[in-house]
Length: 566
View 1 (cartoon, rainbow, N blue to C red):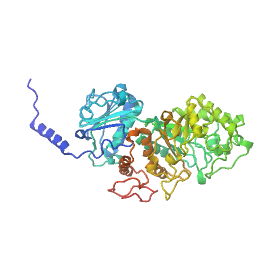
View 2: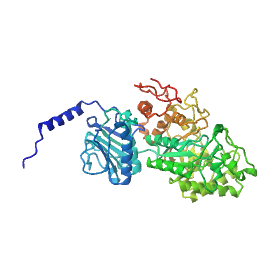
View 3: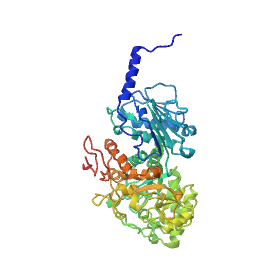
View 4: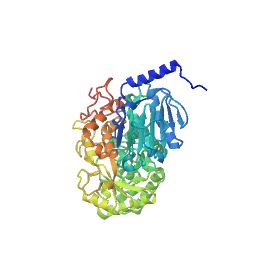
């Protein structure tokens, strides 16, 4: 039979498409302009991809791949207005293809090998993983050609992180909640990426001021956007107890009915907490619950005075001082209480960690303190969880797997270094670098300054791997940025204190040290202002950053006052 010859109209249409692609402007976001900075970037300017209206998202058969594809579709549909159907890998012929592939083989294919989308990477150049190593539990590879985009990973979290990278590579208008007329172009080439540290997180204090479930979910979204994978919830303190415990019901009912300044407080039911955990897990964020012990316990003592030294009920506390409250370490009833609370919270928490606080217990000293900590550590271990505590736990005997969260301001800490030599690992949260309740500048309207002022550069310009004297990089599990909320009362204020410093900490935790460069970081970060503005996210217009001029009105910032530079 004679070969099919395309009609003149078909040839003309194909030629017009090719000419349009060749004449189209470059994608607005360069391949390497991602926060946090990727490990390896191989641009191919001839391979830019433009998302067409009839694009299809294909997932490999694993449920986790389908879930990542569904999340990608949910991110892209509102702004594009495109249907973006999600299918399992099949022989469809869309105008453009977004493919998500999960499995060990996906992590090691060279450019162009076994790639049904034609997304072969940078001009057919072979891109091997550094040292021949795999992508691990969180790494991914993203290939962009004119034919389509492919994200591959060895594990579900990698696909999730690849989705967030693709989100950043699209124009800022992708953050719109309604359809926008835009050329949805993505820069061509290949990214091969994986994290430097396995633990990258932020802490939200919901005890000083209570924040509802929807506010917490919004914080989860911010973490996922920047590939932070742990949300530490500070659930208990002097001002409020925020998690329901069936065996001690007055903890929430009485202890939760307060907050700084005398507000109504609140608490999470077990179903509320499960909702937070499930939402975070789908976005590859692990919830780390903190029950602060033996100090910071006034709310618990108001609910159950028999736990107090002398069994005298204290009044509810709405101030911001610390160090005055504590459980009676000499009473066996205290350890029954700790065991019950830890058991119930552990049962609600699928992640491996349980944080027991341990800081500022000024009235429990010496052997009484270390004895309490050692018993609490054993109680946590009995639930199958690994204990985390603030670095004040260091003098206590080591427990298998124990992690200390270091919040000091002086990089010379012999006691913590000794705990590391005995087997502890560290999460770095230096108060003068990562405490996001610190003011940006002297005139910042909320926040504190006891650890100094923390502008974006100060949050960025340090190295977790070498910060503490006598602590080798291999003992550092990762970094976390705490946000204490004595002066923070709303979601807008949370976002104002998180952004733009949170992405700086995220880059320290994710990116190789070789990519660390303040000038390049501030330029990449500046491009996120239009994204935040489009998404209605509050942020501080830090003078450290060369924010782009806005085409529209100012974003909501400084708690409703226009103030970002124009």
